[in-house]
Length: 161
Image (cartoon, rainbow, N blue to C red; front, side, top):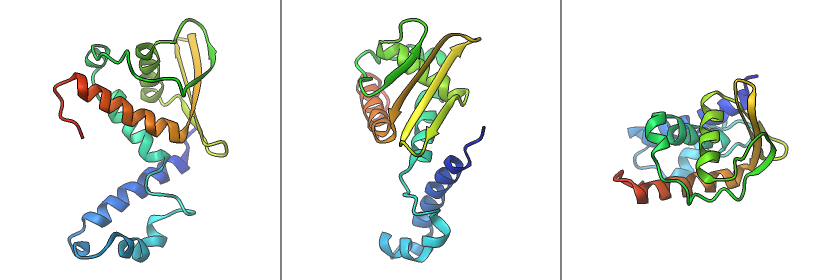
């Protein structure tokens, strides 16, 4: 089922970026822009950096790279300790395997934002077999994404952000 709150959160961030890049706002402070646009930019006090942004970032980090390129990344040292595996059929304890499972979950939209508990729950399976469910607090997922790209940038020729 589509999580429309997630979509709205992502759009809040996109609209915020449009506002701060508008030439008419060049001489304004961020707080002034925020005050002028509070009603149109924010839905029920959502922040600009929200779970919608994290999912967009996860998509660009995990799904955009072609599978062959992604599988060649040395991500064995990525910290996955904040993820809690709640169900698994097989061994998924290594960083490389869990990152591939995150990639599959995001690319097939098999994740759920548990807004009340501030968690993201991921699911992956291979034609109904080799199932895994795992979750992570939203804030920890943001930290994980930051650490992921920093680690990948150390090991590739890609420029860091």
